Length: 475
Image (cartoon, rainbow, N blue to C red; front, top):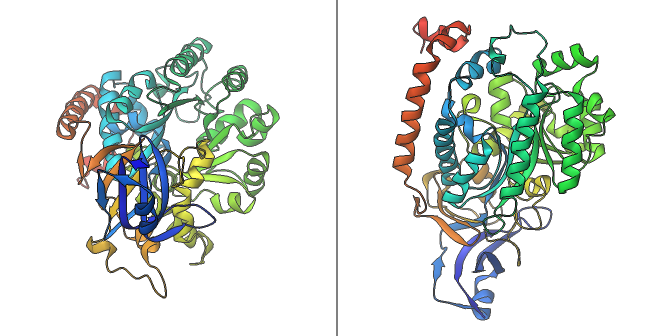
């Protein structure tokens, strides 16, 4: 049988089994958009012929990384809302109200490029204007699980004093929900199945019960999942207690939201009992280590969730507060923060971080039948990583392998040499083949300049901690 590509003589992490599924001197054969076979190099070369052999000597081959929660449209505000209190109200809203859809679109493309260059092949993107942003994934050639973010908040919500109850406008909610339905009907299954769609209530505090129930019914009708922030901060809890007299998780459990369709993002403010309840109900948790540490200075209860038998994955969240969309960064931070939280260096080992960024995230978002591991018949979403970078050298294989600890604790993303998505080479020798990276950055900078000019008065009036640091000469 003939393959389109065979990668040979590499360290291969299949992510099959209970660990990382290491195959030394391994090979991967690709036909079309599918993995034809995985095994030892001698076995693969004896079974398959090809006109294109990629020499993997000194390389590591593994499944593409999965960013299970990201807002690429927000990347146009990168670095504008950290080291501060009330990051959303003071940091984001003054900028969001002054940004236009085409400017958000340009920022999104740069964010996707950033992710791919650091090994992300699947993006669970959750943002406003997703019917436009999704076109970036078509252009780049990435895999995306996209969601329109739905709420009932008026456009001038940023003018509301901090702590006051949000006013809801049902007409806004219905308009945004229609955009989510349009996204699903127009894009679900497109691009040879690379683009799939979910429903996206922004949070239980940002819409009424009726709209929440309408979205749940639609997820069941379209047989898809719900991507949703949950217990993401004190602001949310304050709003829920004022409106319903209940915290988010008990409220959502009461209306039937906690089930296997739900991607529950963050759980920052969840108690241990609430965390265990979400796990028991079968919902998945998406943990964004870098974002929540910068925004809230907290470590969400992912270990409690996993210990309760829950399914979890990792995400990068958004660049205004996290600054980068790099899953190597998230793997490292997830491990380090939980070791510190438990005061135990043995918890959250490197292999667990790697699984949470690959096969476990694939399970969480409902795509493990296609991606997340290197297995015959799965989609060919594959990374080739250069192990001859200083930070990954030297290599030990006996009596202990050091590849996985170095990958999680040392790699920074630039070691990713080649990215294959759906069988197509998207990046080779660090060069993107589908988009003009330099032009994308120029377009995003021009968009940021326009937003900056329009936002001056709102930022000045927002009582932003970062603005004060600027004024006092610290930045």
